[in-house]
Every structure is written in C-alpha cells, then in structure tokens.
Length: 201
Image (cartoon, rainbow, N blue to C red):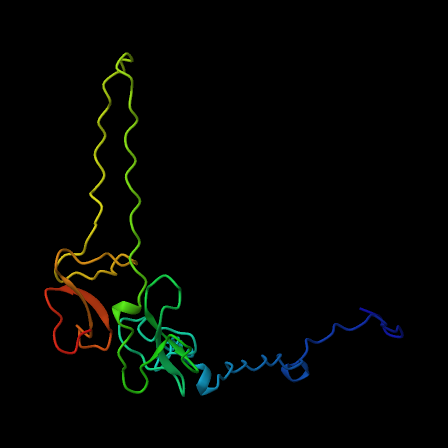
C-alpha cells in the first residue's frame, strides 16, 4: 500500500462486462422455402403413341385394284382397265386415266374380257432329245440311276385354271376353257370344264 503522500498509479482491475455491454447473439438466417413447382410439372407428360397409318380407300394411278385380294376402287376419275400389261399373257387390272386399245374398261359396270380366241396360242414344248447311242464294242459301266424329274404337265385337269402357271396349259381331253366370274367377286378367270355354263365365255 502506498503511504501517505504517495500516489498509486497501478491500474485498477477491470470489471467484467455486464450483460448489457455484451454484443447481441447472431441471428440465424431464415430457412429458405422449398421451390414451388407449377401444377403442370408435378407429373410427367403422357407418352403419345404413334397413330395407325390411314386406311387405303382407293387405288392410285397405275395401281392394281386387286393387289390386296379384294377390289379397292380406283381414285377419282381413274378407270379400272383389264389388259395384258406385261405382254406375258397374264391379264390383270390397272387404274388408268383412260383404257388403251386392247384393254377392257370395267368402270363403272364390268365388261367381258377378251375371249380365248384373241389370246395367243399355247407354246409347243420342244421335242425330247434322244439319248446318245454307244457302239456295241465299247463297254461302259452301268449308269447311276438318278431320281426321275416330276412329269411335265401337258394339260389342265377338270376345274383347273389353265393359266395358273403363268402360261396357257391346254385343257385335257374334251374339256373346254371357260372364262367367267367364278368366285362372284368380279375377278374373271379361266376354268377347264366339261361345258361352259350360262354367263361364261
């Protein structure tokens, strides 16, 4: 302790800060709100399936109206013309703007196709060549027999189509080659019959 007449210059101990002198505690930042999705995005969009192809309702130019197994009418003003278009004796239909010479126009009412007399005659099969002749002095090993080929069809039987193989195979015996609408579906073709019925050619 300082005696009388002396000055004490020692710093006095500092008092601890009172609560009012302390800085306020930090305020926590506000919790962010979750993002808001619009109602349209809450569910995935539906998957669209491809639409089926449109149904063909008519046959276009140069098309075969019987290509699908039934008669699909020609589009617009096209005519359904029956003719030997490939030049191979096979008569079929095409949708054309106008039927040419030698073709039959079946629009709008079907007409009779050409009679058998206007069709080309059936081809004559070539003669079978004779087997080669060996001299008696030459001895050859016995031939190996191969299976014989199926017999060649030389005529068409009863109720058969003589044009089924792409060429005219004549009817057997006294059978007649008759042209008619046998299926009742407007498709005229030939059959080998004993006699042609009414309405057949």
